[in-house]
Length: 454
Image 1 (cartoon, rainbow, N blue to C red):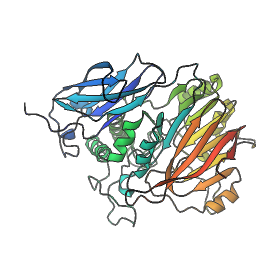
Image 2: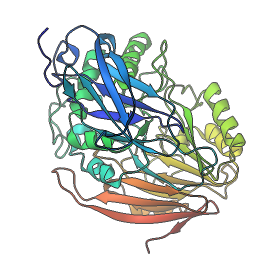
Image 3: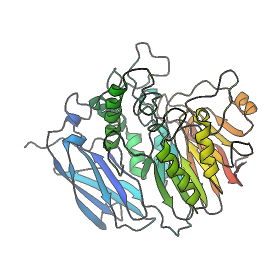
Image 4: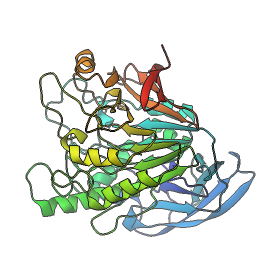
């Protein structure tokens, strides 16, 4: 057999950290954008070696092994490593056919009795054609303990016939919208060839939660949102979920027509992170579905962590708009579901959100419907923000305390006494190299927001 070309073109990643383990990921792809063969790879299984070390030079390798890269899964590799020390930094790499991948850094979660502070970077909405992933370059430089990606990792759109100015800065691999497994695979490959995205994955473990564009804009459960065939959409959704799994360090594979995204990630005594799927189980006026709603309610009531943190895609707090009705593609469209969540929450509740391509911070305490808590909404990595009159919105919604229209990300630092959030922002994404600034800083005090940067 002829020697492969360089197979690690899409980089490496880790994710789903627990106190004693982590998932390591890569995908073999010698021609990532190949039109017919996934990744341009031969139709055979490859045995990929992996190594985990205590140092970046790999002089102290503590675990190693081999994992299959199978053509049915686009030659992706998911290694479930266990037996590690809690709250410890490790380094990993892969090799196959005499070639070695870049090195990635990962970190396990703290043990159940830990009170060590946690540093989290939160990102959302990275539409490739809308600009450069400079935000992710800055995320990598933060070297957080973990990265949360809250949806729209890729966008399914093709290229419009007449793209609006500023909306087609970088070319995609195809002009058609993604509908098939092959198309979704190429779209992920297009994104993951980006060096800033690769750097952010290699810098820290990720925990991801998809929104709608990983499948189709504004889909809800089994409804495609455009009136088309439900059975055809189910096949499309299955293909999208499979591609999502193939390209990210997830613990579970798709089973049947579903891929379970909701999960609990405890970080010592400091925080319980609950990742909530606001898309897959949506039906009628029920945002979460009965099973997920029961799971979340039980988790919130049982949690003894200092901070109860819900991480999910959509705007959670109520929003009134000056000239239009509230969004139905946010929790405003599902007030009963929101009320059930808040009724189950006790103590200090924080919601982390994305989706809207602008940065917001707000409270949702004091009303009849809403219990106490705060929300931090990250802006987009690149996705173009809507035209928003921030001043008018803040005046109309006094529980909302901050708005910023630039692209950016959040840096969350959670400890036993403090929960702080810094809003990082860049001024442009239409060319590389934008510096990052801190647009605002907040501290959570008794389920209310306190500015720390003024």
